[in-house]
Length: 236
Image (cartoon, rainbow, N blue to C red; front, side):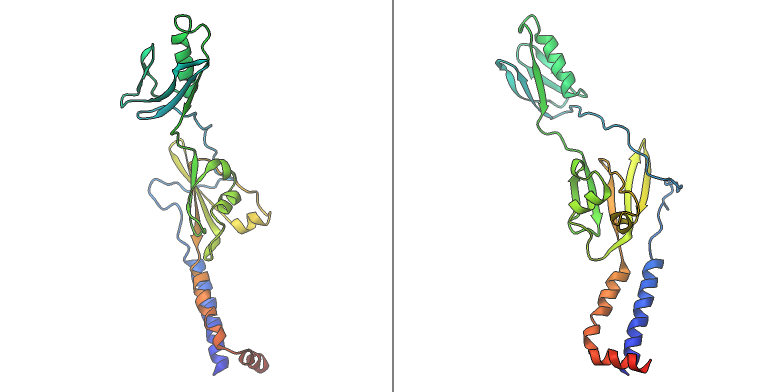
């Protein structure tokens, strides 16, 4: 009876493993997704520099002039009210462009050779999203998650039920959405290059039902003594 019970558990484990392989959800089934073979995901275009928008806070510093330095908040239309100069339209401009604009307005009439620095104080840092079977899902700075392995490590590493050959990277380039499927274990072992991750990428680690079922099965193993396993081997 012990022998039969032990074999039943092993049989259930094999069935669970096969079910987990067959149960991996398909990829690219949405009507606006085209499945194609690519050697690697396309790289996004060079990240654009931060541009100012409504309700952005700017720290403006003019060398040797406290009167012209300070914090300024853009209004709903994208203007700031700047000393001596008046209202300046700064929306959709980079900090460098704004600094040059202020320098041009101040030069000659108010300051001989103005040196202006503009720093946004509430700019959103580029990030990536990491979810699925990782220990600490969330949003992480892109600057510290430059490759897939680094990104997963930043999220605490793989969780207990991670499906190591079902790691997805989603990326949008020129309005087209791309999905890459990776085997993170093979990458960690150096069998494949560690793919580069870019800002706004979404990384998702798949779930392995087979690992969950195997853990349930292993929960029964302590019920079988070492003697029972040895008896089973003796009868074979």
